Amino acid sequence: MRSWVTTKLTEYLGKADDVQDLVDFIISKVADHVTASELLKQISEVFDDDGVFVVKLWRKLIFEMASASVLTSRSGGKKLLTLYK
Image (cartoon, rainbow, N blue to C red; front, top):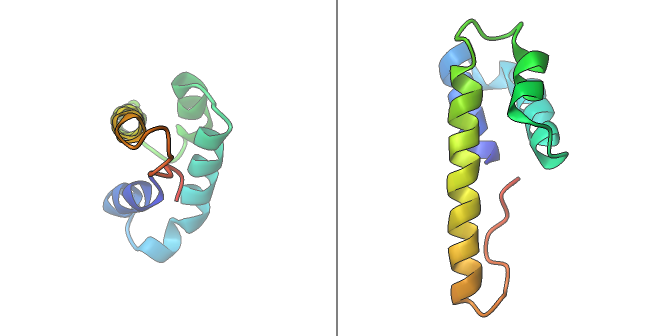
């Protein structure tokens, strides 16, 4: 997730060096299980896209969770994927 968030924020805001604090903030909120609407409120000042970034983030998170679930079930319960790295 971290690399995806970094890539998307760099596309929206510019250089990757300028987005690291925001990436850390977003990843910490996702790890804390903040709702999409709460995250949108907290980062709305940064984005002018009416929540498009947050919607894409949640779609990616759901996809990764589903993938992790499939991988875990195929591996006999062993965790093969870490979402927040």
